[in-house]
Image 1 (cartoon, rainbow, N blue to C red):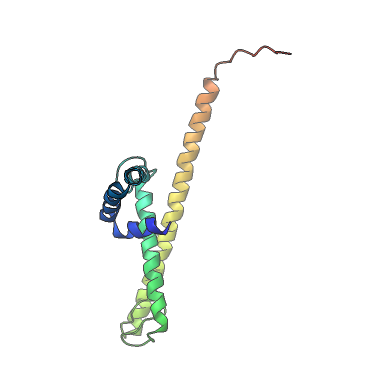
Image 2 (image 1 turned 180 degrees about the horizontal axis):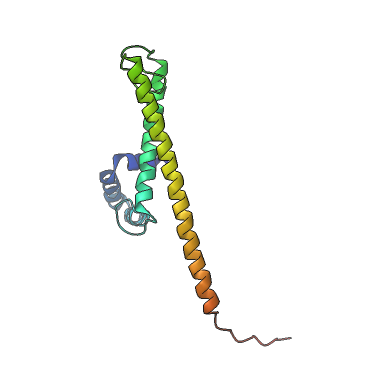
Length: 153
């Protein structure tokens, strides 16, 4: 849905303008947009699984697009002072600093990857604990037996 991604880039104001425009043009469109905004959590209300994860994934998407734009410019500008370096960032002209910066960026990306793995393990542990609790409650409180249906044979 390219329109959703584009409106997400512009933020809440674009969504509000889209909803108002939808109400003006065709009221069911505005109502559907409003329902979508509340359900998806884009306005900070309603159901939104885990808002932190949603915001982080949006931020990660924006960072990935920015990184793609920066590496796309690498072909136009050569290396050297004021150009674009191998990692997509501008060079400082000092190779020692550039190597230090690249190593720091690599380390931060590794830490970010480890953090995402940690969040995944944490989510899995939470889901397993909830499932185990459900199964324990289910074993302790079996469902009431429904009366058998007489055979109409």
